[in-house]
Amino acid sequence: MNKSLKKYFPVFVLPTLIAFIIAFVAPFIMGVGLSFTKFTTVTNAQFVGLDNYIKIFTDPNHDFLNALIFTTLFTIVSIITVNIIAFSLAMLLTRKMKGTNFFRSVFFLPNLIGGIVLGYIWQLLINGVLDMLVNSDITKSSTYGFWGLVILNNWQLIGYMMVIYIAGIQNIPGDLIEAAAIDGASKTKTLFKITIPMVMPSITICMFLTLTNSFKMFDQNLALTGGAPGKSTQMLALDIYKTFYGRIGWAGVGQAKAVIFFIIVALIAFLQLRATRSKEVEQ
Amino acid sequence: MTAGAKKSTNIIITVILSALAVLFMVPMILVLINSFKSKLYISSEPFAFPNSETFVGFENYLNGLKSSGFLAAFGRSLFITVASVILIVVCTSMTSWYLIRVKNKLTKGLYYAFVFSMIVPFQMVMFTMTYIVGKLNLNNVLGIVFVYLGFGAGLSVFMLSGFVKSIPLEIEEAATIDGCNPLQCFFRVVFPILKPTAITVAILNAMWIWNDYLLPYLILGTGNKTIPVAIQIAMQGAYGDTDMGGFMAMLVLAIIPIIVFYLLCQKHIIKGVIAGAVKG
Image 1 (cartoon, one colour):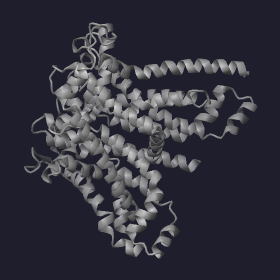
Image 2 (cartoon, chains in turn green, red):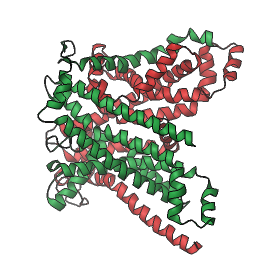
Image 3 (cartoon, rainbow over the protein chains, first blue to last red):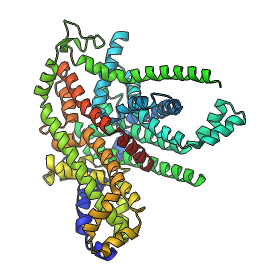
Image 4 (spheres, helix red, strand yellow):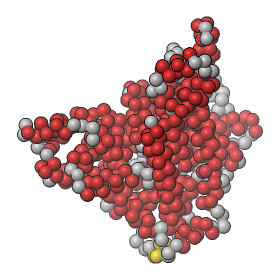
């Protein structure tokens, strides 16, 4: 089999490989190279060494650093709120009650709607509430923008994480919970000593999923606040985009920002791999 | 706990969950309500139900469809999503099988390259990819399908290879002895076995491609709008002069296909999401 299959490389692998090179491999290598150059149209790139990277951090507006701080705060708050709410919902929905499937479907639905559409749906709602309460709108204050993005992110991710937690909780052997009840363990004790340790792999997965999803957010940010007021609610992905396309002569800096962004995301992925691997060994 | 106490707790929980479910639906219901109101009353009174003065029937829907080229955008989104998903599923399952069954340095290296691409954020390749795609004249509705194959390859190869590893070699060997060449062996024997994972891969890619904004915006521009691009342009391109009524109608029309798709294959979607999360 192997020998005859080997000759079929052009049929089995080549189409995917060519698309992969065009969409990913070549742009990635070019991107790393261009981050050390000044250019406007790729063809006129001039080597400038680490200039672009230095510019990121000496930029008097501190756009990148501000975006990094905003994104980090947003991500931390999202990880906490999304996972606590999603886990609580999963606990409520695994009690074998009527209507469980209906609730699960409703909570999961927002996850399927795209970021741009979500952003504008929430803009209408949030601006309506802000107008009624304080006669303002979401572009007037970065506090509104921050919490608006957090609420939107929760709305989108809670159902997703809840589904993963439900699968985790349903995998706990029923006799374990029964044994605890017979031994006289209180509900809180069962939760902290049995349920949570048993769904630890799901918790790890959900924490990292929330982390990467929040950290890389772009569409929702663009649609809901567009970075306003000023650039105060601009997250990393949007800042990179605006550096590329909104600031003439700064494409090289945009590419350098993208490289740093990539390195941070890769580090997170590496940590995730280690965290999930070590959990697997324990089991 | 007595049965009666348990029953009353369940009632309380059901009430809490129902309240939450309503809260979850509010944003979508709000858009739906406003899509039937005159555009003058949407920004000023978003929470009011339409009354005899503000109700405009389906006028917003007609305006929204007309002004934004929404029907064309819908057709384009549908074509790009369906074509890309079919191409991705067929090509990457063939690739995955080859990469697992033919063991050498090249296939190993390729496998790791595909897995590596999953962790690279889009912003890293966005600018250079747009440039290359433009140079190769792939910046059209057919070309973008091929570009999606390249972007979808990472996750798809990763998930499908994981499954190929679990297929016993004996089945394929038997097919070969019976005189199948690799192509026949793949499509008659391997692909049917891969089907459950292929469905998962198809759903994950479909959800992502249907909702994708930045890639079609950069490659196709505003001349060949997909639904997310049409919505973003309707809002940002009008510089504060957006027809809010038509815009609400567009949002409703953008959500309806997703809800229909969800109702039709909810089980597969939720299964796919769990599988994708655990592997990714």
